[in-house]
Amino acid sequence: MIGKPVNEQAIEKKQAKIHYFNHAQTVKKPVMKNLFEFAEACLHRPSIDEKLALSHYARHLLLNGALDLAEDRPLLPIASVKFPDKPELLAPRYMPARKLTTTDGVTAFFHAIAHVEFVAIYLAWDIVYRFRGMPKQFYQDWLRVADEEAQHFELIRNHLRTRSIDYGDLPAHSGLWEHAIATADDLLARLAMVPRCMEARGLDVTPAIIEKFKVLGDDDSVAILSRILTDEVGHVESGSYWFKFVCRQKGFEPEAKYRQLITHYFKGGKPKGPFNREMRIIAGFSNAELDWLETHGNENTKYF
Ligand SMILES: [Fe+2]
Ligand SMILES: [Fe+2]
Image (tube, rainbow, N blue to C red):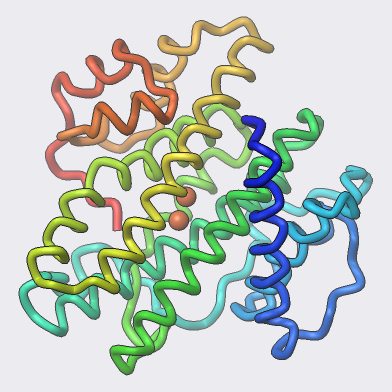
């Protein structure tokens, strides 16, 4: 949505090419060129490596002006989306302990983050796939997010592998995709609940986690989480931009609509604080929205 300087665009192009070619040995080069065909494949083929390669390749095509955005493919229902057999999905209360003071706790923490990033790839592709008829920039923005989520997942999966476990070896939280199912027919609700609620929560909690890893002297974890945090500000910012865009299109007042949607879709009525006002303002929240969130937050919310 937001124009980037030419030198940044050149770096993005190069990175997308590198990410794609890193996968080229494991997955055959796809013949597809249409964005919605990529989205359909990423949502309905459970292979993790194929999903990563397709996400990077679609971005590579976009940045080289070779991606077809024609919307003539049929839309399959959200119930047909397929996830891999592993990890086993469990309710939050059955998750392994993630205390950063023990080796197993740190491993469980990164496995939980890997799962958040993995579902985030699906969430980005699903917003591309399910909400047709938007401006070209909408699809370009969410494809960028899908590609960055795939990069985040790979960073964390590689980090897990240095700890001798892989993604799927531990159970994972079953709740994240439920927000997508609940908002499958309502773009404003999707934007309010996913980028402007779940992803925005990452902006609140990640800085303190980075500080803990700094204290532990774990520089690799600090570097990975810092990189992810920087990208996530952009994801929430895209969410805010498109939320306001659609509100304007439909004649809604954005702050009132946000309050209404969060109250309706968020179990318990409101996400819990404390909120990172500085980062959320950069990411497109208003002071009035933050003031509302800060009053009577729900204290029992778990995000991953
Ligand atoms: Fe991410
Ligand atoms: Fe994200």
